[in-house]
Image (cartoon, rainbow, N blue to C red):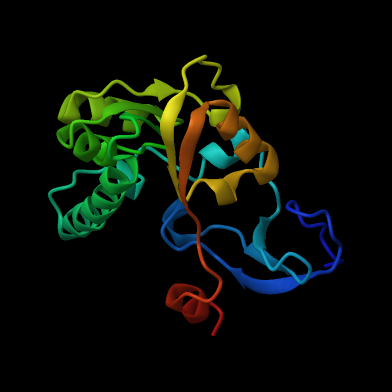
Length: 204
């Protein structure tokens, strides 16, 4: 493949970091996915770029985060989420209570924030996620992609866990998030790390 332009800084100084299949989707028969590394801004990005309709097929109704949280995997998720709730409570102490989660999945994390007495809102692209959040946690999620989110509401914090890497234009996504923040508001983001052990394991 020729050099691919970085969606963060528009540099062509990129190289292939890894090529792999996703064995957890499409019965283990996904096409190859590519992650490129930008030598200029030191970020990785996936290629090819999907539009929202193309992306949706990789998040079917039985996708893991839409399943019951009574399994071992669910317990681990809940423990990890609990740590993030503690961090968010500390950050927002005496500074506000309104939180929006982008890509809320099944609503688990928002349910923990709700128990922590924070005011919650969430958006989720999956009908299964929206349904599960309502049935299990009594949380109403707005079904949409963030690009289509047009609420005038503003928040003290916007949370997005492993969402930013799915945007074809992450800079524009962050700029839009900022328009939904109150003055002095916070973005609480998580993205994959190229130096993490899962990345190294895939790249063996």
